[in-house]
Image 1: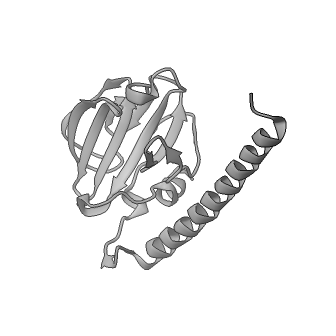
Image 2 (image 1 turned 120 degrees about the horizontal axis):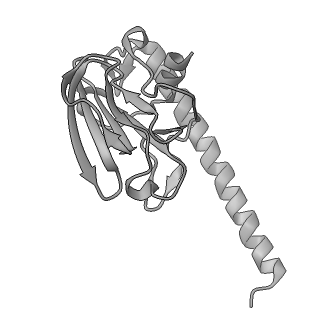
Length: 178
């Protein structure tokens, strides 16, 4: 049996690790905001116009900047938007919707935006429209499929500029939410 002192030492080590991760997350978020302000990602000029971007969940919801939060075996590659199961998810931009199902993602949609970016919507309860859609079209509904089963219903949302690596969607979501 472990002693209270041993458990307290482990707790303190975990708290210190969490503080280090939070500092790193804040530095990454600052860097992303600077890149967004410059209008470029990964040194390549590209603009993601907020004016044409529609918030992906229609209805009451909540979200936070959980980009790169620790997950089992990886870092979180998007933001979770919590809403009641069945809340409509809409195309954030015009583009082509591809529906799929994965072990971890559950029911998901890949939106290849006409803007050249790729957007992922994961853990859907069910699908909406497919094929080419205009911004604002319902393409799915908030759920808890995949590795979110049994947890609070939410939309896991990712942005991949130019189809490349994911970026933190939080600044864009925040701007579109207002």
